[in-house]
Amino acid sequence: MPEVRVEEAQRFMQESLLAGGAPLTEAMAHADLLLHADVVGHYSHGMNRLELYINDMKSGVCNPHAEPIILKETAATAWVDGCDGLGATVGNFSMALAIKKAKECGVGWVAVKRCNHYGMAGYWALKAEKEGLIGMSFTNSSPILVPTRAKQGTLGTNPISMAAPATGGDSIVVDLATTTAAMGKVEMQIRKGEPLPEGWALGPDCEPTTDAQLAFDAGKLLPLGGLEKTNGYKGYCLSAMVEVLCSGLSGSRATHNVPQWSHSQTEPPNLGQCFVALNPECFAPGFGDRIADCLQHWRNLEPVDPSLPVLAPGDKERNNAKVTHARGTIKYPESQMTSAKRLADRIGIRPLEAI
Image (tube, rainbow, N blue to C red; front, side, top):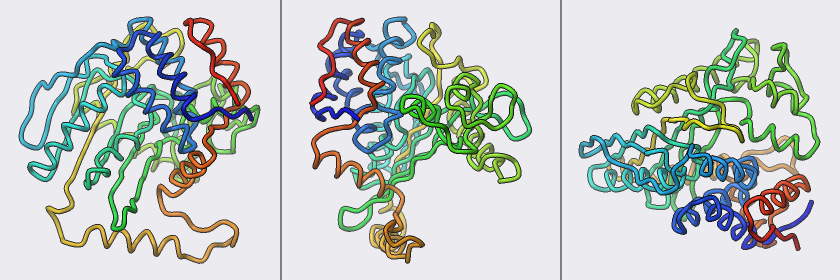
């Protein structure tokens, strides 16, 4: 696959967002959000999503100049209007507010309405972890999760994320969709020309499919766990839980009323999002040591395959980031380079250059 220097990928995404209408500060912030996903190996949420953000700004779905507004707050909580702003704009405002409240009174819980797609949920949880806090973030999304026994998508990928610090600079990071895989992962299989693993999606006939394009067109993802016989209703319930924390608390649209995110979308999605920060110092002493002990215990478990050591949550992304930064490049599928070239030509910026 073609390799692009990390700095070049960042340059291209930042210039694209600027050309799309974002102010420099917000273009830089949103490019950092997308770059993080590519650096840690979650290509579905990085440059793969860039053109959708550009289209959202140009069509008026997203207002890149928006400034979030606090509608109601207490010492530990806040209700925020995201004003249809860029994901990074709303996310940075809301998580900073949650962190501030957590440092002042132990917990900060912020629910936000009128949001757009905000990239990897774990990116926002890590903002709190870097401040010595437990961070959590959730969002609802387009209706593409098919509940157990149903025929149509009604809930979203509705991700769950949590990051917590451990002694010695270590951390645990949990970031997962409540579908078996996010739709962006299906898109990446299309880009690579590879089939889906079994249990990811249904076709238009509501039967399981491994055809990535067919699954993308049908828009019917299975909940985490897959079919009912493999306990997929647990993923369905987790997605419903996220819905309560996002649209329920914020007053945004419930997922079943959210339009599909697409290149032709003209209506703001009014997503609901939730940002949480919690100060472990308000609880039993020695939190960091206990988390560090858990992490090391898990990593030291005897693996089934000696060549595949047991990983703690967040290790895969951490390892990918180390490899990426050591190499200095990000590897993109050829189809991603082709898409980037078309985008550059359309918005009038210098194309993405491979080494």
